[in-house]
Length: 256
Length: 265
Image (cartoon, rainbow over all chains, first blue to last red; front, side, top):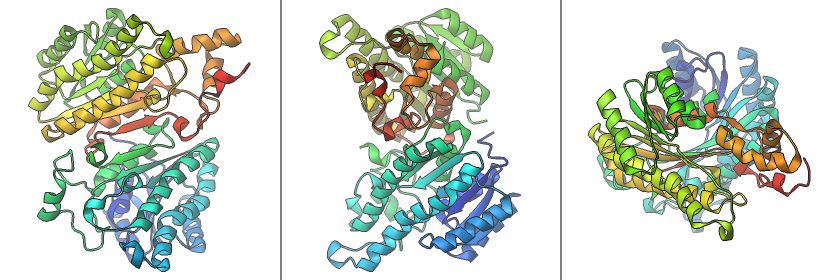
Protein backbone atom coordinates (compact mmCIF):
# COMPACT_ATOMS: atom_id res chain seq x y z
CA UNK A 1 0.00 0.00 0.00
CA UNK A 2 1.27 3.38 -0.95
CA UNK A 3 0.36 6.63 0.77
CA UNK A 4 -3.26 6.70 1.75
CA UNK A 5 -4.91 10.01 1.00
CA UNK A 6 -8.45 8.71 1.56
CA UNK A 7 -10.82 11.43 2.60
CA UNK A 8 -8.37 14.20 1.80
CA UNK A 9 -9.15 17.02 -0.62
CA UNK A 10 -6.43 18.40 -2.89
CA UNK A 11 -6.45 21.69 -4.79
CA UNK A 12 -3.96 21.54 -7.67
CA UNK A 13 -3.18 24.37 -10.06
CA UNK A 14 -1.95 23.72 -13.58
CA UNK A 15 -3.50 20.28 -13.27
CA UNK A 16 -4.52 20.04 -16.91
CA UNK A 17 -1.15 18.80 -18.08
CA UNK A 18 2.30 17.57 -17.13
CA UNK A 19 3.29 17.28 -13.49
CA UNK A 20 0.04 18.82 -12.26
CA UNK A 21 -2.03 16.28 -14.16
CA UNK A 22 0.15 13.38 -12.99
CA UNK A 23 -0.16 14.60 -9.41
CA UNK A 24 -3.94 14.87 -9.68
CA UNK A 25 -4.15 11.32 -11.04
CA UNK A 26 -1.80 9.94 -8.40
CA UNK A 27 -3.53 11.59 -5.45
CA UNK A 28 -6.92 10.51 -6.79
CA UNK A 29 -5.69 6.94 -7.15
CA UNK A 30 -4.56 7.13 -3.53
CA UNK A 31 -8.00 8.16 -2.37
CA UNK A 32 -8.00 11.95 -2.47
CA UNK A 33 -10.72 14.00 -4.14
CA UNK A 34 -9.14 16.62 -6.39
CA UNK A 35 -10.04 20.15 -7.40
CA UNK A 36 -8.39 20.19 -10.82
CA UNK A 37 -7.56 23.79 -11.67
CA UNK A 38 -6.13 24.95 -14.98
CA UNK A 39 -6.17 28.09 -17.06
CA UNK A 40 -7.75 25.96 -19.80
CA UNK A 41 -11.06 24.45 -18.68
CA UNK A 42 -10.99 21.71 -21.31
CA UNK A 43 -7.57 20.55 -20.08
CA UNK A 44 -8.86 20.44 -16.52
CA UNK A 45 -11.91 18.51 -17.71
CA UNK A 46 -9.69 15.97 -19.49
CA UNK A 47 -7.79 15.34 -16.26
CA UNK A 48 -11.08 14.94 -14.39
CA UNK A 49 -12.26 12.44 -17.02
CA UNK A 50 -9.05 10.43 -16.51
CA UNK A 51 -9.56 10.54 -12.76
CA UNK A 52 -13.11 9.26 -13.22
CA UNK A 53 -11.86 6.48 -15.52
CA UNK A 54 -9.69 5.32 -12.63
CA UNK A 55 -12.63 5.36 -10.26
CA UNK A 56 -11.56 8.56 -8.53
CA UNK A 57 -13.21 11.87 -7.78
CA UNK A 58 -12.32 15.20 -9.34
CA UNK A 59 -13.95 18.48 -10.31
CA UNK A 60 -12.59 20.84 -12.97
CA UNK A 61 -12.16 24.57 -12.52
CA UNK A 62 -10.61 27.17 -14.77
CA UNK A 63 -8.56 29.91 -13.20
CA UNK A 64 -5.62 32.05 -14.17
CA UNK A 65 -3.39 32.06 -11.08
CA UNK A 66 -2.58 35.71 -11.80
CA UNK A 67 -6.20 36.64 -11.18
CA UNK A 68 -7.42 36.82 -7.60
CA UNK A 69 -11.11 36.71 -8.45
CA UNK A 70 -10.72 33.65 -10.67
CA UNK A 71 -8.76 31.88 -7.93
CA UNK A 72 -11.41 32.74 -5.37
CA UNK A 73 -14.12 31.40 -7.68
CA UNK A 74 -12.22 28.11 -8.03
CA UNK A 75 -11.70 27.98 -4.27
CA UNK A 76 -15.37 28.58 -3.60
CA UNK A 77 -16.24 25.94 -6.16
CA UNK A 78 -13.92 23.43 -4.49
CA UNK A 79 -15.34 24.17 -1.06
CA UNK A 80 -18.87 23.83 -2.42
CA UNK A 81 -18.00 20.52 -4.02
CA UNK A 82 -15.97 18.96 -1.23
CA UNK A 83 -16.60 20.99 1.92
CA UNK A 84 -12.94 21.56 2.72
CA UNK A 85 -9.38 21.49 1.39
CA UNK A 86 -6.41 19.67 3.01
CA UNK A 87 -3.72 19.91 0.35
CA UNK A 88 -2.58 22.61 -2.04
CA UNK A 89 -0.19 21.92 -4.92
CA UNK A 90 1.06 25.19 -6.40
CA UNK A 91 2.04 23.76 -9.76
CA UNK A 92 0.90 26.28 -12.38
CA UNK A 93 3.88 27.83 -14.07
CA UNK A 94 5.49 28.62 -17.38
CA UNK A 95 8.84 29.34 -18.93
CA UNK A 96 9.86 31.85 -21.56
CA UNK A 97 13.30 32.38 -23.00
CA UNK A 98 14.75 35.73 -23.95
CA UNK A 99 18.20 37.22 -23.58
CA UNK A 100 18.30 40.20 -21.26
CA UNK A 101 18.70 42.73 -24.07
CA UNK A 102 15.50 41.53 -25.69
CA UNK A 103 13.50 40.72 -22.55
CA UNK A 104 10.34 42.82 -22.54
CA UNK A 105 8.69 44.06 -19.41
CA UNK A 106 5.54 42.24 -20.45
CA UNK A 107 7.38 38.91 -20.66
CA UNK A 108 9.08 39.53 -17.29
CA UNK A 109 5.69 40.24 -15.75
CA UNK A 110 4.09 37.19 -17.36
CA UNK A 111 6.72 34.86 -15.90
CA UNK A 112 6.98 36.47 -12.47
CA UNK A 113 3.22 36.93 -12.11
CA UNK A 114 2.46 33.34 -13.07
CA UNK A 115 5.26 31.54 -11.26
CA UNK A 116 5.68 33.64 -8.13
CA UNK A 117 2.83 36.07 -7.60
CA UNK A 118 0.41 33.32 -8.58
CA UNK A 119 1.68 31.15 -5.72
CA UNK A 120 1.17 33.99 -3.29
CA UNK A 121 -2.36 34.65 -4.53
CA UNK A 122 -3.40 30.99 -4.54
CA UNK A 123 -1.83 30.30 -1.15
CA UNK A 124 -3.47 33.37 0.32
CA UNK A 125 -6.83 32.11 -0.90
CA UNK A 126 -6.43 28.45 0.06
CA UNK A 127 -4.37 28.48 3.29
CA UNK A 128 -7.27 29.73 5.44
CA UNK A 129 -9.44 26.93 4.08
CA UNK A 130 -6.76 24.36 4.93
CA UNK A 131 -6.39 25.90 8.39
CA UNK A 132 -10.16 25.70 8.81
CA UNK A 133 -9.95 21.98 8.11
CA UNK A 134 -7.48 21.61 10.99
CA UNK A 135 -4.35 21.88 8.90
CA UNK A 136 -2.71 20.14 5.99
CA UNK A 137 0.12 20.57 3.59
CA UNK A 138 1.26 22.64 0.63
CA UNK A 139 3.77 21.65 -2.02
CA UNK A 140 5.20 24.27 -4.35
CA UNK A 141 6.83 23.56 -7.68
CA UNK A 142 10.35 24.90 -7.62
CA UNK A 143 12.98 23.47 -9.98
CA UNK A 144 16.66 22.66 -10.06
CA UNK A 145 16.81 26.13 -11.59
CA UNK A 146 15.85 27.50 -8.19
CA UNK A 147 19.41 26.45 -7.27
CA UNK A 148 21.50 26.74 -10.43
CA UNK A 149 21.34 28.37 -13.84
CA UNK A 150 21.28 25.58 -16.39
CA UNK A 151 23.38 27.43 -18.92
CA UNK A 152 24.12 24.33 -21.00
CA UNK A 153 20.76 24.62 -22.73
CA UNK A 154 21.82 27.97 -24.19
CA UNK A 155 18.42 29.33 -23.27
CA UNK A 156 18.65 32.62 -21.44
CA UNK A 157 15.90 32.98 -18.89
CA UNK A 158 16.73 35.42 -16.12
CA UNK A 159 13.04 35.95 -15.45
CA UNK A 160 12.37 32.22 -15.02
CA UNK A 161 15.37 31.77 -12.75
CA UNK A 162 14.35 34.79 -10.69
CA UNK A 163 10.79 33.53 -10.33
CA UNK A 164 11.86 30.05 -9.27
CA UNK A 165 14.53 31.36 -6.91
CA UNK A 166 11.69 33.35 -5.38
CA UNK A 167 9.63 30.19 -4.99
CA UNK A 168 12.37 28.72 -2.80
CA UNK A 169 12.25 31.49 -0.21
CA UNK A 170 8.49 31.85 -0.54
CA UNK A 171 8.30 28.19 0.45
CA UNK A 172 10.50 28.61 3.51
CA UNK A 173 8.80 31.80 4.65
CA UNK A 174 5.36 30.23 4.26
CA UNK A 175 6.55 27.18 6.20
CA UNK A 176 7.56 29.40 9.11
CA UNK A 177 4.44 31.54 9.01
CA UNK A 178 1.88 28.78 8.50
CA UNK A 179 3.32 26.25 10.99
CA UNK A 180 1.18 27.59 13.79
CA UNK A 181 -1.88 26.90 11.64
CA UNK A 182 -0.72 23.30 11.31
CA UNK A 183 0.14 23.67 7.63
CA UNK A 184 3.43 22.27 6.32
CA UNK A 185 4.94 23.90 3.23
CA UNK A 186 7.62 22.27 1.08
CA UNK A 187 8.82 22.38 -2.50
CA UNK A 188 9.95 19.84 -5.05
CA UNK A 189 12.72 20.66 -7.47
CA UNK A 190 12.22 18.72 -10.68
CA UNK A 191 15.10 18.36 -13.10
CA UNK A 192 14.67 17.09 -16.65
CA UNK A 193 11.08 15.84 -16.75
CA UNK A 194 9.40 14.72 -19.95
CA UNK A 195 6.50 17.16 -20.21
CA UNK A 196 5.49 19.77 -22.73
CA UNK A 197 6.62 22.48 -20.31
CA UNK A 198 9.46 23.76 -22.47
CA UNK A 199 7.90 25.11 -25.68
CA UNK A 200 9.09 23.01 -28.60
CA UNK A 201 11.13 20.74 -26.32
CA UNK A 202 10.86 16.97 -26.39
CA UNK A 203 12.90 15.39 -23.63
CA UNK A 204 11.99 11.92 -24.86
CA UNK A 205 13.84 12.40 -28.14
CA UNK A 206 17.11 10.49 -28.66
CA UNK A 207 18.89 13.82 -29.19
CA UNK A 208 17.65 15.16 -25.87
CA UNK A 209 18.69 11.98 -24.08
CA UNK A 210 22.14 12.06 -25.68
CA UNK A 211 22.64 15.57 -24.33
CA UNK A 212 21.52 14.61 -20.82
CA UNK A 213 22.65 11.09 -20.19
CA UNK A 214 26.08 12.04 -18.92
CA UNK A 215 24.51 14.65 -16.68
CA UNK A 216 22.06 12.33 -14.94
CA UNK A 217 22.78 9.64 -12.38
CA UNK A 218 19.74 7.56 -13.28
CA UNK A 219 19.37 5.76 -16.59
CA UNK A 220 16.29 7.59 -17.85
CA UNK A 221 14.66 10.96 -18.22
CA UNK A 222 12.28 11.87 -15.43
CA UNK A 223 8.58 11.32 -15.83
CA UNK A 224 5.79 13.51 -14.42
CA UNK A 225 4.85 10.52 -12.26
CA UNK A 226 8.25 10.67 -10.54
CA UNK A 227 7.54 14.20 -9.37
CA UNK A 228 3.95 13.29 -8.50
CA UNK A 229 5.27 10.52 -6.23
CA UNK A 230 7.50 12.98 -4.37
CA UNK A 231 4.65 15.47 -4.05
CA UNK A 232 2.39 12.72 -2.71
CA UNK A 233 5.01 11.88 -0.08
CA UNK A 234 5.46 15.50 1.01
CA UNK A 235 1.68 15.94 1.32
CA UNK A 236 1.25 12.69 3.25
CA UNK A 237 1.47 12.12 6.97
CA UNK A 238 4.71 10.23 6.30
CA UNK A 239 6.30 13.66 5.86
CA UNK A 240 4.77 15.05 9.05
CA UNK A 241 8.13 16.39 10.34
CA UNK A 242 9.18 17.92 7.02
CA UNK A 243 8.43 21.58 6.44
CA UNK A 244 10.38 24.35 4.75
CA UNK A 245 12.34 21.73 2.80
CA UNK A 246 13.39 21.57 -0.83
CA UNK A 247 13.33 18.10 -2.38
CA UNK A 248 15.19 17.72 -5.68
CA UNK A 249 13.58 15.15 -7.99
CA UNK A 250 16.23 15.42 -10.59
CA UNK A 251 18.03 12.15 -11.24
CA UNK A 252 21.05 13.57 -9.45
CA UNK A 253 21.37 16.67 -11.64
CA UNK A 254 22.37 18.89 -8.71
CA UNK A 255 24.77 16.33 -7.29
CA UNK A 256 27.82 17.07 -9.38
CA UNK B 1 3.80 -2.80 -0.05
CA UNK B 2 6.59 -0.41 -0.82
CA UNK B 3 9.56 -2.68 -0.10
CA UNK B 4 8.13 -6.00 -1.16
CA UNK B 5 10.83 -8.63 -1.78
CA UNK B 6 13.56 -6.21 -0.76
CA UNK B 7 16.34 -7.01 1.66
CA UNK B 8 17.68 -4.25 3.89
CA UNK B 9 20.45 -3.65 6.38
CA UNK B 10 19.78 -1.03 9.04
CA UNK B 11 22.73 -0.12 11.24
CA UNK B 12 22.07 1.15 14.72
CA UNK B 13 18.87 -0.83 14.46
CA UNK B 14 18.38 -1.72 18.12
CA UNK B 15 16.90 1.58 19.27
CA UNK B 16 15.68 4.96 18.13
CA UNK B 17 15.54 5.83 14.43
CA UNK B 18 17.13 2.52 13.43
CA UNK B 19 14.61 0.38 15.29
CA UNK B 20 11.70 2.43 13.95
CA UNK B 21 13.11 2.16 10.42
CA UNK B 22 13.57 -1.60 10.73
CA UNK B 23 9.95 -1.97 11.83
CA UNK B 24 8.68 0.31 9.05
CA UNK B 25 10.66 -1.62 6.44
CA UNK B 26 9.35 -4.95 7.69
CA UNK B 27 5.80 -3.59 7.65
CA UNK B 28 6.32 -2.68 3.98
CA UNK B 29 7.49 -6.16 3.09
CA UNK B 30 11.27 -6.00 3.47
CA UNK B 31 13.48 -8.59 5.11
CA UNK B 32 15.75 -6.72 7.50
CA UNK B 33 19.17 -7.34 9.00
CA UNK B 34 19.58 -5.10 12.03
CA UNK B 35 23.04 -4.27 13.32
CA UNK B 36 24.34 -2.48 16.37
CA UNK B 37 26.71 -2.71 19.29
CA UNK B 38 24.46 -4.33 21.87
CA UNK B 39 22.99 -7.73 21.01
CA UNK B 40 20.00 -7.56 23.34
CA UNK B 41 17.93 -4.76 21.79
CA UNK B 42 18.93 -5.94 18.30
CA UNK B 43 17.67 -9.42 18.92
CA UNK B 44 14.41 -8.07 20.32
CA UNK B 45 13.82 -5.98 17.17
CA UNK B 46 14.88 -8.84 14.88
CA UNK B 47 12.54 -11.28 16.62
CA UNK B 48 9.67 -8.85 16.37
CA UNK B 49 10.06 -8.38 12.60
CA UNK B 50 11.31 -11.83 11.64
CA UNK B 51 14.67 -10.34 10.72
CA UNK B 52 18.26 -11.11 11.59
CA UNK B 53 20.45 -9.47 14.23
CA UNK B 54 24.19 -9.03 13.72
CA UNK B 55 25.89 -7.43 16.71
CA UNK B 56 29.15 -5.58 16.34
CA UNK B 57 30.92 -2.27 15.98
CA UNK B 58 29.85 -0.50 12.79
CA UNK B 59 33.38 0.82 12.21
CA UNK B 60 34.74 -2.74 12.22
CA UNK B 61 35.15 -4.00 8.69
CA UNK B 62 34.67 -7.64 9.67
CA UNK B 63 31.37 -6.75 11.33
CA UNK B 64 29.89 -4.94 8.32
CA UNK B 65 31.02 -7.76 6.03
CA UNK B 66 29.29 -10.21 8.35
CA UNK B 67 26.12 -8.13 8.14
CA UNK B 68 26.18 -8.20 4.33
CA UNK B 69 26.89 -11.93 4.41
CA UNK B 70 23.92 -12.41 6.75
CA UNK B 71 21.64 -10.59 4.30
CA UNK B 72 22.85 -12.77 1.45
CA UNK B 73 22.73 -16.03 3.38
CA UNK B 74 19.41 -15.50 5.12
CA UNK B 75 17.53 -13.55 2.46
CA UNK B 76 19.38 -14.10 -0.82
CA UNK B 77 20.82 -10.66 -1.52
CA UNK B 78 20.72 -7.00 -0.58
CA UNK B 79 18.80 -4.00 -1.95
CA UNK B 80 18.67 -1.33 0.73
CA UNK B 81 21.17 0.05 3.23
CA UNK B 82 20.41 2.56 5.96
CA UNK B 83 23.62 3.70 7.64
CA UNK B 84 22.12 5.03 10.82
CA UNK B 85 24.54 4.04 13.58
CA UNK B 86 25.93 7.12 15.25
CA UNK B 87 27.12 8.65 18.46
CA UNK B 88 27.97 12.08 19.75
CA UNK B 89 30.34 13.59 22.29
CA UNK B 90 30.28 17.22 23.35
CA UNK B 91 33.25 19.46 22.93
CA UNK B 92 34.44 22.55 21.06
CA UNK B 93 37.42 22.02 18.77
CA UNK B 94 40.08 22.90 21.36
CA UNK B 95 38.49 20.61 23.94
CA UNK B 96 38.10 17.39 21.94
CA UNK B 97 40.77 14.82 22.70
CA UNK B 98 42.12 12.51 20.02
CA UNK B 99 40.25 9.50 21.32
CA UNK B 100 36.81 11.11 21.23
CA UNK B 101 37.50 12.75 17.87
CA UNK B 102 38.57 9.44 16.40
CA UNK B 103 35.74 7.45 17.90
CA UNK B 104 33.18 9.90 16.54
CA UNK B 105 34.64 9.87 13.05
CA UNK B 106 35.08 6.09 13.19
CA UNK B 107 31.47 5.35 14.04
CA UNK B 108 29.56 8.11 12.26
CA UNK B 109 31.62 8.48 9.10
CA UNK B 110 33.96 5.53 8.65
CA UNK B 111 31.23 3.16 9.82
CA UNK B 112 28.86 4.48 7.15
CA UNK B 113 31.64 4.28 4.57
CA UNK B 114 32.61 0.71 5.47
CA UNK B 115 29.00 -0.45 5.46
CA UNK B 116 28.43 1.13 2.05
CA UNK B 117 31.69 -0.29 0.74
CA UNK B 118 30.79 -3.77 1.89
CA UNK B 119 27.24 -3.50 0.54
CA UNK B 120 27.77 -1.93 -2.89
CA UNK B 121 28.86 -5.10 -4.74
CA UNK B 122 25.74 -6.89 -3.52
CA UNK B 123 23.53 -3.99 -4.63
CA UNK B 124 25.22 -3.94 -8.03
CA UNK B 125 24.56 -7.67 -8.32
CA UNK B 126 20.82 -6.98 -7.93
CA UNK B 127 20.93 -4.31 -10.61
CA UNK B 128 20.85 -1.46 -8.12
CA UNK B 129 19.49 -0.39 -4.78
CA UNK B 130 19.18 2.51 -2.40
CA UNK B 131 21.53 3.75 0.29
CA UNK B 132 20.47 6.25 2.94
CA UNK B 133 23.05 7.86 5.17
CA UNK B 134 21.39 9.21 8.30
CA UNK B 135 23.19 12.48 8.90
CA UNK B 136 21.79 15.42 10.85
CA UNK B 137 20.90 19.08 10.48
CA UNK B 138 24.25 19.50 12.23
CA UNK B 139 25.73 18.76 8.79
CA UNK B 140 24.27 22.04 7.55
CA UNK B 141 24.38 24.33 10.58
CA UNK B 142 26.60 23.80 13.58
CA UNK B 143 25.31 23.31 17.09
CA UNK B 144 27.45 24.38 20.03
CA UNK B 145 30.18 22.16 21.47
CA UNK B 146 30.01 19.46 18.85
CA UNK B 147 33.14 19.76 16.72
CA UNK B 148 33.60 16.04 16.08
CA UNK B 149 29.90 15.27 15.64
CA UNK B 150 29.27 18.23 13.34
CA UNK B 151 32.30 17.36 11.24
CA UNK B 152 31.36 13.70 10.93
CA UNK B 153 27.78 14.49 9.93
CA UNK B 154 28.84 17.09 7.34
CA UNK B 155 31.25 14.63 5.78
CA UNK B 156 28.44 12.10 5.37
CA UNK B 157 26.79 14.44 2.86
CA UNK B 158 29.88 14.28 0.68
CA UNK B 159 29.98 10.51 0.98
CA UNK B 160 26.34 10.23 -0.12
CA UNK B 161 26.95 12.46 -3.15
CA UNK B 162 30.08 10.58 -4.09
CA UNK B 163 28.33 7.20 -3.97
CA UNK B 164 25.45 8.65 -5.99
CA UNK B 165 27.80 9.88 -8.70
CA UNK B 166 29.96 6.77 -8.93
CA UNK B 167 27.26 4.13 -8.65
CA UNK B 168 24.32 5.86 -10.35
CA UNK B 169 25.19 4.06 -13.56
CA UNK B 170 24.97 0.78 -11.64
CA UNK B 171 21.46 1.62 -10.52
CA UNK B 172 22.33 2.63 -6.98
CA UNK B 173 20.75 5.72 -5.47
CA UNK B 174 22.36 7.33 -2.44
CA UNK B 175 20.88 10.12 -0.36
CA UNK B 176 21.54 11.74 2.97
CA UNK B 177 18.79 12.34 5.50
CA UNK B 178 19.15 15.22 7.94
CA UNK B 179 16.82 14.99 10.92
CA UNK B 180 16.58 17.72 13.51
CA UNK B 181 15.78 16.84 17.12
CA UNK B 182 14.30 13.37 17.43
CA UNK B 183 12.93 11.72 20.55
CA UNK B 184 15.33 8.79 20.84
CA UNK B 185 17.70 7.47 23.50
CA UNK B 186 20.45 9.53 21.82
CA UNK B 187 18.28 12.64 21.80
CA UNK B 188 17.43 12.02 25.46
CA UNK B 189 21.17 12.00 26.18
CA UNK B 190 21.56 15.38 24.50
CA UNK B 191 18.85 16.82 26.74
CA UNK B 192 20.70 15.93 29.94
CA UNK B 193 22.80 19.08 30.09
CA UNK B 194 19.72 21.26 29.64
CA UNK B 195 17.80 19.27 32.25
CA UNK B 196 20.65 19.77 34.72
CA UNK B 197 21.20 23.41 33.83
CA UNK B 198 17.56 24.41 34.24
CA UNK B 199 16.30 21.71 36.61
CA UNK B 200 13.67 20.62 34.11
CA UNK B 201 12.20 17.33 32.92
CA UNK B 202 13.07 15.52 29.72
CA UNK B 203 9.83 16.61 28.07
CA UNK B 204 10.44 20.20 29.11
CA UNK B 205 13.95 20.03 27.67
CA UNK B 206 12.65 18.83 24.30
CA UNK B 207 10.07 21.59 24.36
CA UNK B 208 12.78 24.11 25.15
CA UNK B 209 15.06 23.13 22.26
CA UNK B 210 12.20 23.06 19.79
CA UNK B 211 10.29 26.12 20.96
CA UNK B 212 11.54 28.25 18.06
CA UNK B 213 11.28 25.54 15.41
CA UNK B 214 8.17 26.10 13.28
CA UNK B 215 6.56 22.78 14.29
CA UNK B 216 7.51 23.42 17.96
CA UNK B 217 8.19 19.79 18.83
CA UNK B 218 10.83 17.15 18.20
CA UNK B 219 10.28 14.40 15.66
CA UNK B 220 9.30 10.91 16.65
CA UNK B 221 11.55 8.11 15.47
CA UNK B 222 8.65 6.88 13.33
CA UNK B 223 8.56 10.16 11.43
CA UNK B 224 12.22 9.81 10.49
CA UNK B 225 11.70 6.15 9.62
CA UNK B 226 8.99 7.26 7.20
CA UNK B 227 11.57 9.45 5.44
CA UNK B 228 13.95 6.47 5.17
CA UNK B 229 11.09 4.51 3.68
CA UNK B 230 10.43 7.15 1.03
CA UNK B 231 14.10 7.36 0.09
CA UNK B 232 14.42 3.59 -0.28
CA UNK B 233 11.12 2.93 -2.06
CA UNK B 234 10.40 3.24 -5.77
CA UNK B 235 8.50 6.43 -4.99
CA UNK B 236 11.87 8.22 -4.98
CA UNK B 237 13.26 6.38 -8.00
CA UNK B 238 14.92 9.46 -9.54
CA UNK B 239 15.87 11.09 -6.22
CA UNK B 240 19.60 10.65 -5.73
CA UNK B 241 22.62 12.52 -4.42
CA UNK B 242 20.42 14.80 -2.42
CA UNK B 243 19.94 15.78 1.19
CA UNK B 244 16.45 15.45 2.63
CA UNK B 245 15.99 17.73 5.61
CA UNK B 246 13.38 16.56 8.14
CA UNK B 247 13.64 19.12 10.90
CA UNK B 248 10.23 20.61 11.54
CA UNK B 249 11.29 23.68 9.61
CA UNK B 250 14.23 24.46 11.89
CA UNK B 251 16.61 25.31 9.07
CA UNK B 252 14.10 27.67 7.51
CA UNK B 253 14.50 29.96 10.51
CA UNK B 254 17.58 31.13 12.33
CA UNK B 255 16.60 30.62 15.93
CA UNK B 256 17.21 26.99 16.80
CA UNK B 257 20.02 27.62 19.25
CA UNK B 258 18.28 30.24 21.32
CA UNK B 259 17.61 27.79 24.15
CA UNK B 260 21.27 27.51 25.07
CA UNK B 261 21.65 31.27 25.33
CA UNK B 262 18.76 31.69 27.74
CA UNK B 263 19.21 31.92 31.49
CA UNK B 264 16.03 29.99 32.26
CA UNK B 265 13.16 28.45 30.29
